[in-house]
Length: 501
Ligand code: BGC
Image 1 (cartoon, rainbow, N blue to C red):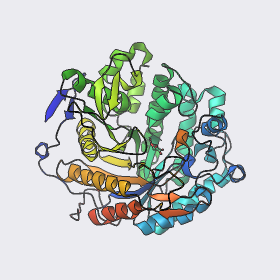
Image 2 (image 1 turned 60 degrees about the vertical axis):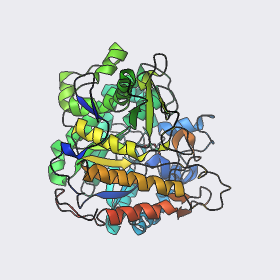
Image 3 (image 1 turned 180 degrees about the vertical axis):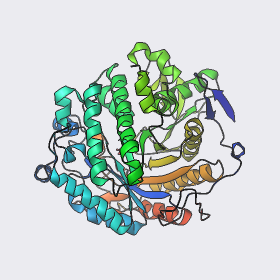
């Protein structure tokens, strides 16, 4: 095992996970949550007419999809999986597969079409989320709710530039969050303020691959700060005014894949840490440790907006857990010339002996590397010292997307991926002592700029008929979770443990 000292003095875990750091390895809590994860913009839409009739306002993704060339197959957020109509069927299916929780997001413009504080609410949208939450509870799925999964009301972008205007957006987002706590907080006990702020900042405002499609080397850092302050403002409001009476918890979920140094050379070991700083530490170091990673300060200088004392106080203890989305692992080399967003590193899969890590997937950036997942869990737990909620983990396997496939349900590569990743999770918990409290897979849905082409899901969706068919991995994943993990959600204290694993 190697312990490297990161640039600002925190000990970063790199190397083989070991149990000896922990006196006693805990088992999983009896209220471990598992099931499927979705996002409003990726699954709700049943077509332009239905969306119009539903009263949802446009989001920046509607406008982005309208512009030719932005979405790989020309598909549109307005027509995805028709969850708006099929939510009961979807919930019944998840339940029948064995899930005990459902992670979904609320669409801000469906609740407040124009988005702003004082703008009118859309009663039809409120009814939809009331019904969705009630249906979950009726069948016994714990609703795990994301407040923002990238669908900013378009009007706010037009009014003042959306996330580029910190003061205005923080006020409007906090108002929207408050509206949701008021409306749904009597039944929703697990809140996520944001899904993957890195994507909004870099993909949306840095390289222009996501809405609103900006290309800039200054905007991402401004947007990143607005997102963090908005997160903290909403979560502190929840903690102050709702937590005691509603009894829930709130946090943020970040994306981040394990970064394995290409070799043991100091420059590549440092590069791997730097890549982690730019992907995860940018948000997590600020929120959990109270400062930007030093490597970001060194590289970005005054393009990295400073936080005031009040803002740092607001951010402190603003996330009760670490929400984690992860998909793969990369080998990392230092580079001087390319990719500032990756902290001047290159990501690949190759090793010095000519071999490559992981099993290939349908998308070039994605590989099945379970040992990297275990290392990531160890790193996050040791660095941030918070319980971890795994909120997304999935793979798009080769061939899964081709319409000429006759058998949509045979997804052996995904079965294998989930077997490996759940095994890695168990080892992280049982052997390494990492506190992990949930695990969510996926169903096929609108994959943002990649449209309906890649399929990450364990449930096949026919985009013509909206018919759903569970793939082999849906059954196997939920079986692993139900037999390997306790099968029923219990309200008992999270310190209760199960021995089933
Ligand atoms: C996002 C999901 C998306 C997945 C696969 C994640 O970064 O949170 O919305 O479906 O990536 O593309």
